[in-house]
Each structure stands twice: as C-alpha cells, then as structure tokens.
Length: 338
Ligand code: EPU
Image (cartoon, rainbow, N blue to C red; front, side, top):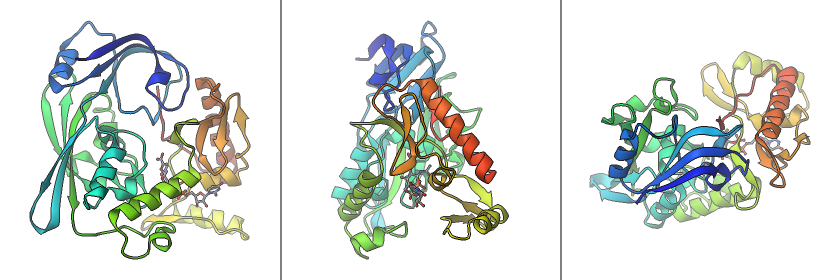
C-alpha cells in the first residue's frame, strides 16, 4: 500500500541533511499504484521522482509531490558464453545489487560498489567510479511517461549515455519519465577493470569480484565522508572537460606541479575538479554550516548538521568564482538543485 506524507521534511529522504519541506511525498509499492498516482490530477504538481536522494539539494520548499519507489528486487538470467542479464527494479538499492552480484561471481558492477542511490537513479545519472560507468553495462531501460502513462523500452543507444548524463537529463525528458526497470548486461567470465588509480596494486591481477568490490569500498571510505555521519550529496561538481590547449596553458603556469588529467578525446582532457578547487585555495572555505571535505574537496558537506540550502549555494558560488578567476574554467554542479 502506498504511503502518503504531507508537508514532509526533505531530510527524511535526502542525504545532505539540509532542511526544506515538500508539500506531499508518496512512497509506492507496485507499478499499479504508480499508475493510479500518475492518473490523479488532484496531486500537488510538479511531480519529482527520487531514489535515495543522494544527489539532490533542496534550496527551498517544494510545492509539488515527491514520488519514491519501494519496488526492489532483480532477476538474473544466465545465457550462453557467460552472458548474464540482470533485470532490476528501479527502487533496488544499487549497492545491494553490486554486493549480491559480486557474491555470485557476476562481473560488471563491482567498481560501482559503495555508490549511494537506487538502480533507477544510476541510469538517469549514469553514475560512474573507478573506470566504470553504469551506462557501459545497461542494455535496456523500461520507463513510463508521466503525461501519457505509456510505457517505453529504451535501448542502450537511445539512452545517450555520457559523463554523468543520459537522455533522461535532456530538457524534453527530464522529470517526465519514470524508470521502472533497468536491464544490465553482465558476465560470469572474470573481467576485472583495474586501470583506475592504484586498484591493481591493491588487489593484484586476478582478484575475485568480491576482492575488487572490497578494495573499491576501502578506497571510497578513505576519501569520502560516511553518509551515516556527515551529510553530503557526493561529488558536488563535475570534473570539467577542457581543450588540450587550455590544459597545456595550465601546465605551463604550474611548472612545479604534476597536473592530473584523464584523456577523453583527441583534443580534450578531463581535469579533476578536486585538484582545481584545492589549487584555487578553496579547501578551507566555509559558509555557515557548509564546508569542503578535507580529503576530497569535490564534496561539499553539512559540517555539523546545521547547514542551510543558502549556505551551500553561497559556498558553491564562491568556489566557482575562485576556480574561474584562477584557471579560467567554469565548474558545473553535478548535484541537482531544486
Ligand atoms: N585531489 C587534490 N586535492 C585534494 C584531494 C584530491 O588535488 O585535496 C586530486 C587528487 O590528487 C586526484 C583528484 O583530485 O587527482 C581526485 O580524483 P579521484 O580519483 O579521487 O576522484 P574524482 O575525479 O575527484 C570522480 C567521481 C567520483 C568517483 C571517483 C572515483 C566525478 C564528479 N566524481 O571523482 O564520483 O567516486 O571519480 O572514480 O566524476 C560522485 O559522483 O558522487 C563520486 C563520488
């Protein structure tokens, strides 16, 4: 049975711990319930679907209805030549799926271990870590149009996956479609992805999926705040992509420094926003209850639980200005602002 809350505190379903009110929140337990909710024209609008609320910042009260799926679970189908298809309901906690699949020796999602959020959100956001993006592993996405109530199946190509991007983030689709099921194409043939940072030196060349999962979790724990203790929404900014020419100028201006980079295209380089923030001298910046996590300054944290939405947006603006004036690069938030 769906559960309805009125004038709800968003801190109960987001990870940042920033106070705001939502006019209505509905938790639903079946697709049938979701369809009746969508057909109900009396609900406060707009509608906004959330997963675990781990990539969201409410900067003010929300006048509409927040929808949250409690449909969790997945089916595993083993095909020939080690191919494994996994159909997971959008409300499944992504890390539970990563854990269960690593336990049964199914490869493909272990590098995404420890990322907060649900399966549905992982497809919208194309979450990524340690050299793997969810979109690399997604074959199909089933979704419903909240306006026409029609169901669609999107193929991998239709999803337009990019860095923290999918078709569900384009203007025409954003907040109009709700993901029901995500189909991952995985494998039972050992295929560890070890190229990112020092993963190989930690687990060696032939780890089990569980070894790799545990190593990823250990690295994350050493750098990122524990969501149970310190509020945040993970990486606050995207890593900017700049031209090789602009990168060369930055390198030349910092002869004593090895400037970190990832090559992304023929003439493009991704540069860690954490490094830019650090070198622009922002690490110690605070605004009210908001500050930067010392070991990973890409993460804005709710230092002692007292931060407000405007503390965070003030700090965000100061960081963007400082990085822009030091490097001529404009940072863009990864976290969605409501
Ligand atoms: N760095 C500094 N100063 C510091 C800390 C770090 O210069 O004080 C530098 C490091 O030397 C390193 C870089 O910043 O070069 C940090 O790189 P890291 O591999 O830790 O990750 P990232 O590029 O900052 C991205 C994702 C993370 C993901 C990691 C690991 C984005 C926006 N973030 O961060 O995703 O876990 O890679 O793959 O792409 C998230 O999206 O919420 C998230 C945590």
